[in-house]
Length: 364
Image (cartoon, rainbow, N blue to C red; front, side, top):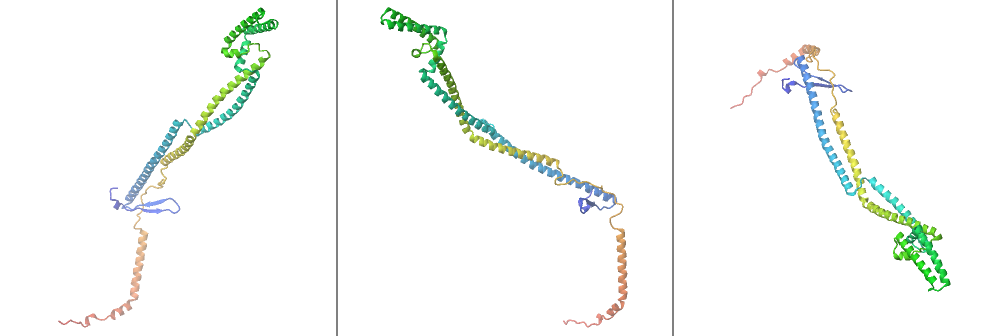
């Protein structure tokens, strides 16, 4: 309306008890003017409350945005610290460290069992080696030689020549032609057997000299057992060495990762907390955007400003009652004055005449 706000007037507001209702009325120069002022007041009220809601939402969004940004930076910083620690140590999670510790314990137990088995195999090889008077390498060479048909034939021939040589020595002297012939035959056969043995076994001269080229006979089973035990012992020794290296590396890595694992667990816990706080702040921010009536409840108009059918003032009945009351009081005053007339006259007559009173004049 085109008027000064001071001339608009103040609305009369009445709150209805025990309800959320507000009754508002406006005074105007005419019914149409009062209705127009009510509509303007209603529009101004809704405009102001919408402005207050928008201002509150803006303040909340600004504050929430700053808090969310702080939470986001905290999450990113913790995530970066975790990534840096993972890159430096290769440790992805605390569970990985627990798995490493468990694997190290299992490896240590297997190492203990393997050590006991290796000692048992080593003792068996030593016992057979002492009993047979040979080494596992020579025993394997002997078995390989006697498995060869050509060497077996040479060994048989060498045994026959050895028997003939022994028989000739028993009958004749060392320079007897029979003895020399048997010795030469034996030497030739032994030389061929040694050459064949060197070809099959790749043994050195000293090892061939200590190798028994005669037929193994009943010793074959023990030699085979010695070779088998030595193969098992060698395999266990290699496995023991590899497992020992693995155990040492696992122990070293476990010790090196104790502090990083504890640090990673703390960082993971901090990251979970920061992420939960960030998610909660985001959820609160979204709920605040949808809850527009948190501080300023929703207002509904039950009845639009109506056109008055009668003036609010002056009220005819009240004015009539006031006139009647004033008339009655006036008549009562007249009646009381008439009843008190004699008293009033006596009071008037008893008042001295001021004009006859002596006058005092100051002398000059």
